[in-house]
Length: 348
Ligand SMILES: *Cc1c(COP(=O)(O)O)cnc(C)c1O
Image 1 (cartoon, helix red, strand yellow):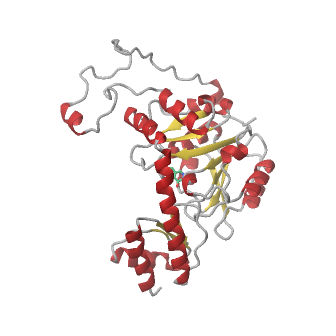
Image 2: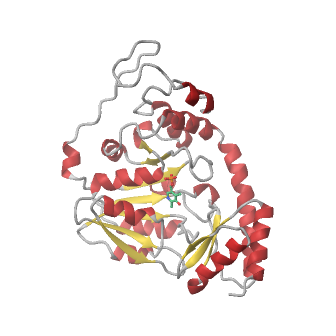
Image 3: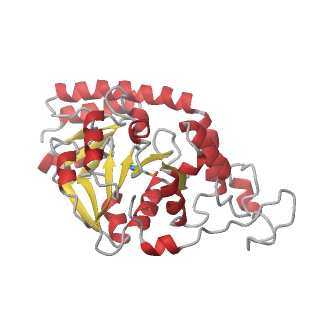
């Protein structure tokens, strides 16, 4: 069983206010005057009254996510983006001095959120731009409480396969929480990259993170979630900032989840462009790892900053990670062409 913080085990679950459609509810300490007229004019029209607190248990959203994955709603925890869910997971298991293991480089939020939670970040070097799961398993000590497996990995775009992920999970003690972050799942080739929920969904210490910020195009609204064993979800819920997922975000996310066919269609367009751009970049002499995401990783090392400046001069914004590489997001075909032209004119 995953080791939770003793203080969390003692915490009660927050009791949401009762809802009574059409009734008077002086229970939520909101203003009784409704939306400010100016706000009402400019806000996209929400289905309910956003002058009231949102559904704290996000019932409709949990139901929609549960249906989306074919799991029980008791297994879902939502947050304002999956970054917030990362925080909830950390706050659930990490106490002072406890260790959190992740590959490096990986998602920038991991070390920040780990430190905020009072934990100690343990960064394990990638191997050929890919998570080194063997080294990550070897980095586990009796202080390790949580491991982030970003698959595919941001910013290097690479993924680990089914066998490697299963073998890794087998090596991790059951009291250590494994968080498989699948923020880019919609762009991954299902024949090469396992769906951790399908592969490991029955494990007592595996949680899968997903977000509506990437392929679902809702990054500004902040909705993410994890699918966990029900006992874990029940504890992790308690670490949530109350009402962090706004009413507008909840309603919009439900609609977005219903559009998964359109999401898949758009993701396929991006994947086709990604493959085209990768080939062109390799043709230009760059050593580009196989991407399973909506970006490519250019391991330019010391040239990364210079390349980013060169792109800026051409009015293209890329993401340099100084001394290591540059993350380039796949855009529309004409945008990608501009980037390719800039690569061709770069003299290093
Ligand atoms: C973008 C991203 C997230 C989540 O973003 P949210 O907007 O907080 O949902 C999580 N993990 C990785 C690896 C990401 O790249």
